[in-house]
Image (cartoon, rainbow, N blue to C red; front, side):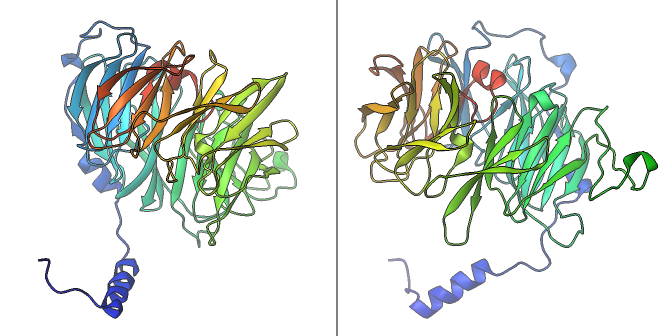
Length: 443
């Protein structure tokens, strides 16, 4: 019915061809970025007040990958306010301006979209790259940074998506290029922090116009002007590492970035990088491949702890963030991707979506560090990615199916409250929680 079958040798030849390097390597120039920008709504045509009634800080933005749409949900009424088509294959993590009016989306093929939540309209778009990883919005709302896999660049824009500059992701010598695997905003530091997938460097790019100059390499006496300084504003300050980081998140004070590295054998290791002294200060004893970007931090017995699932083994690693020692491994039903909690609940929720038990959410008590519940509302279907309402009263889970839903649970009793139909909701974020907490720093 489907024509001739390929032989084993032909299949191998096809695989080799697919993975062979493209020559010349595709590029996306500054001129192409600027030419791609689309202005879809003028500011003079937009109201300076919401066109709907709701608590503007208790809205959810839901990325529905099944049919490439975005929904806006009322976190009080737990109802959909608006639904609109998006670019193809959006990254699941939209980013907000500090006033909560605008949200930015990034698609895997490099398109960045600015959406006015108050007016329910897309304002502008630009293509930042050919293959983009994610984006970050500065805490002051003035800058947008986009991490690209292809080309190997970090693209910086103003809030209206006008290109400011493109930074080639290369080492200091310029002989090694890298994909940018993640970029996040470090609000208290007034900077973006970016991880490099293919070279052992972590970059910090300050958006403070008064940032101190950057001296790469060793300088005997700064006062003598022995080195040529790079302006500290919108330029990378490099931290050299032993091995690359693939993803990371910050501690609550933003002095440290906890990162995960990938190795050729599929294993991984966690490390702690201090952004002030610009070096690794500790290793993290985490089995398997940690996905630290989805970990959490919380207080327990006067200590700050970090907890993270991983992609290889069914355990949650709980680490003391003062000693950086693992104090407990909590067994789960299988490898998981997302772990989330809220300051108003004693519980953390985690999935096992990388395992046969992908249909089960597990609830962990942050005080006893024990599993207290397992939730399986739809046997055999993928259930993941918890996000809480502003007050922490409800936990919303994603049923990752084409005919899926947002399933709302009571965060204290774990009982299902209602379902909101959605087409493979891969990411959903409460506006208040995202503005007031950075990646992975939820309590």
